[in-house]
Length: 274
Image: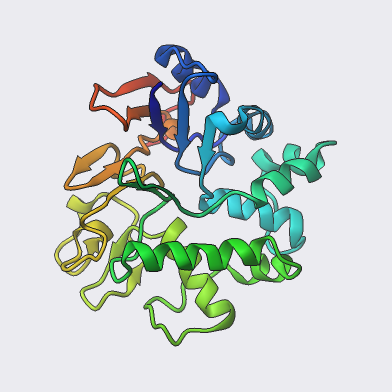
């Protein structure tokens, strides 16, 4: 048995299947950890959802910001106009089943044996693992509740940008969602910076990658994440970043996380866009 973590797929099903072939993946024996953003921008979002759902227990997936956006389009119509790459999902005969499956996915997955946690973008530096797990459950329960549509309509926006235990209501839930699914950089005061989207080398000390913030409370646990294609593959000090920009014409990357083996990567079939 092997456990492979795989970066953002974003509707690139052909590359995902290429990667599974390169891994000689066997769903009866092996397991996948998928860092989220299964859909959007790539050519086969609908088929990707169906394929991963049908993998059943062989694939563990966390929600990414594009997956949450799809939920909003389906459950809170009018919140945002649907992208062309998601219209096929919204019009599919099995749309409701796919949305219910997606809605049931977690924001955070933790394996105690591996001492490894998976999220889409990261864990806010001021949270320890216990608090992060608890806050993830807050959002997961809200997404599965009767007011999920209202939450999905109100999740958009970048404020508040700093955490307080006193935050309540949709402001609290929005900050938690943004931290797990959109975060890249933090300012020295701990607030989130959503304007910077390039790699860390493109900015000075006025902002830092969330994983380099001083006194980060999850420094003792390995964190696997995606979301940040301009960061690319990065592995250092309990941090493993796996979004290598497949949808932008880059690579789709898998790392075996139960054993330290070489990366397995496949080239994108998409047109290079940066």
